[in-house]
Image (cartoon, rainbow, N blue to C red; front, side):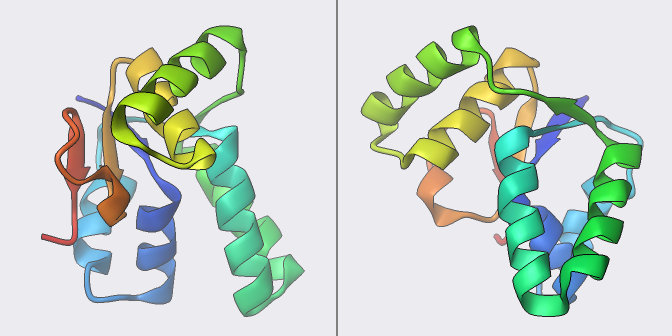
Length: 125
């Protein structure tokens, strides 16, 4: 299985939240895993704000070791625009969803903004 691990899952995992075990199944799993550069922005920002820049840099290294990082490119941008309109998503969420679609993966998240969208696994259920 191919997955895109959303920022929500990484943050839940690192803060040891209620659904950290559900996130761990994918973060520590054997699936072919991806992240969007948007996920890097969101995750780095949250970790740096919560724990400091040194820890944030360390966490980025962890993401880089576990996943393939997909940059925002034209085809993903156009697909994100379509998904934004279709599902009434914010820009960042639309880019993440489009990136998951681009790699033919399943989006792993707990973000309720993705509820009811196909090829999304909500780990907080």
